[in-house]
Figure 1 (tube, rainbow, N blue to C red):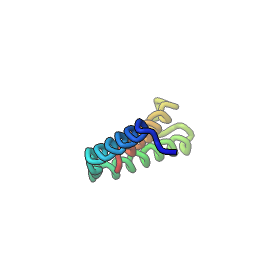
Figure 2: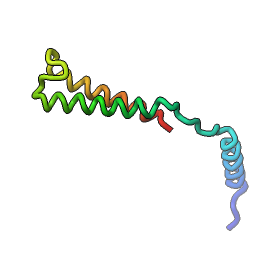
Figure 3: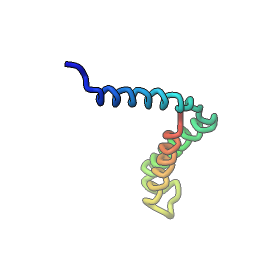
Length: 88
């Protein structure tokens, strides 16, 4: 069964749009050289902060704030994850 002319026009239009779209895409840029070390450092600082908090039986790293030490540790980890989204 032959295809209708409408369908053929739609297919041709989509093919033209895809070709045009490919031309506009810019090549991926590399991430800055400081991004990966800062990202890994944030992951490690957050992990160490939480481990120290548990191993010291909640006395360290900052004894006066108590369980807020967990939020500080997870904040470092969250910053690491946000930097990981920018890494190429």
